[in-house]
Structure formats: structure tokens, C-alpha cells
Image 1 (tube, rainbow, N blue to C red):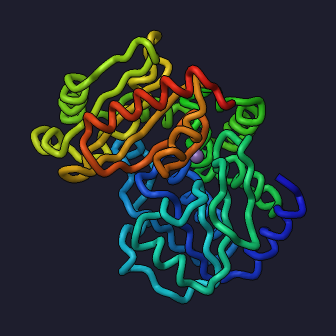
Image 2: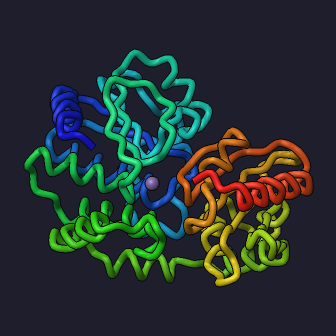
Length: 328
Ligand SMILES: [Mn+2]
């Protein structure tokens, strides 16, 4: 990340009055922590903000105050003088409605992100694929303003690091992540709240949903891959929503025989959403690209229309191929 870019973005934000902050749909701790944390900071320097996400805060992140989050494009005015897109680099990642809005707007867009293969062309971007979370880029941006970071903002930014590094365990964890986390704790970030919430914010319905998902599991030992899926019927019978299956792909990965965890969620009869996680086994960003999806090398996803057995067969073949012909 160049300091010139940081300076240009800081100046552009200083000129703005009314700012729209958008992060990717099906938000995780990085999407919400970055957008709500940055919004709090912008408010503290007298900027008006609207924080949009297509979806609500998932259950496991309920310790985050998302009461100001706008989930519908209808509640969005069009008098913004700046738009900030966080933790994404493809309009499609904001959801269909917002994607159309962004394609038609004349307002300046700033992208702040750490994903590979950027797809948005803009004059302003703060992109670092080596950064453990978008929240770390936000942290550096806020520091450039020379303003104090309060404990609420610090907690939100620490959340981005803890969730994107799977609590400092996955290969996304680097020295910068540890340094920034330590600085955030010095600023009053409540790590205890984040950790205890991530461990304990679970409902019994979620447990029942997980039971259904585990019944659907298949382990392919030749490619060290654990695949499981969840049908719309599974959600219905356990009285749960997709938010409660957030994080399942990571959970599948966290077993010693498993090098790739894949979770497939049914959207409608023949439509599926695939989330994939690994810890350096193969490049999942490239694998997702083959299915017109995207993400990082260790976490990626895509949408698929068709039969799930065929989808599983395709995934199996592709992973076997990547395993035998690694492309870095
Ligand atoms: Mn992220």
C-alpha cells in the first residue's frame, strides 16, 4: 500500500460530506467491522454516513452493534458525494440491487480491499492482497488522519483481524496482523468480548442445523476434501437462516484429515452457493475463478446453477487436477 494512495484517499474523504459505505453481502467480521468501524470514525470527524449491506449481521457476530446497518436499497438516498466499497473488489459482491446502483452512479468510488484479482476500475483504491484483513487497511487510513481511535472503533477493527485470521491461526496471520491487534488492544479493544462471543453466541437451532449439515457430509480422502451441503428444507425444518450456517466451511476444514472444507448452500431448487476454505493446500481463488467466482487463495466461493451431484463431481475433478498440477 503506497503512502501516496493513502494521502489521496484521505484528501478525497476530507472533501466529502455525505458518504455511503458498502461491504459484501453475507457479511463476515471483516466486512462489518471495517464498514461500521470506519463509519464511526467518519462520524467523529463530522461526516454523515450510511452503511449498507444486503444482509443482516450474522448471529455469531451479534456483539457488534449493527442497528444502523441499512439492508434495503430503497432506504438509500442518492445525494452521496462519495462511496466507499470495503472488503470487495467486484460490484456483484454487494448484491444485485446495489450492484446496479453502483454501475449507474456518477459519484466517486473508493475501493479498500485485500482480495486478489481486482475487478473494479476506479481512480481511488487502497488495495493490499498481503493484508490480513480490510480492517488493517482501515486502521492505517484512520491513523493517517492523526485522530484518536476510541475503544468501540478499536474493537470493531480487532474483530476484522480475529475473524479473517481465524483467531490468529490460519496462514493469513502475519506479523502486521499481530502488531496491529496489539496496538488495537492498547487502544481499548475488547478482545475478551470478541472471543467469548465467537465461542458462545450459539443457539440450539444452530446446533440442530449443524446436525443436518453433518449428516450430508462426504469425505474424499484422495483429495483430502470434506464437502457438506444444506438444503432449503434443512433451514426450514430447524427454523434457521443462512446466517446460522456462516462459518461452516471453516468448521469442516478444522479437522486433521481435511485440507479443503467445502460448504454448499441451496438457494433454490437448482441453484447453489459454494464456500471453500483451505490452509495453503491449493489456490482456491483460481479454483473459484474456474466457476466464475472469486476470493482469496485460502477462502473463495462461487454460485452454481444445476444438479448438486454434478457440482460435487466437477469440484472433485478440478481439485484432483489442481492437486496434481499445482499452479501456485
Ligand atoms: Mn476480508
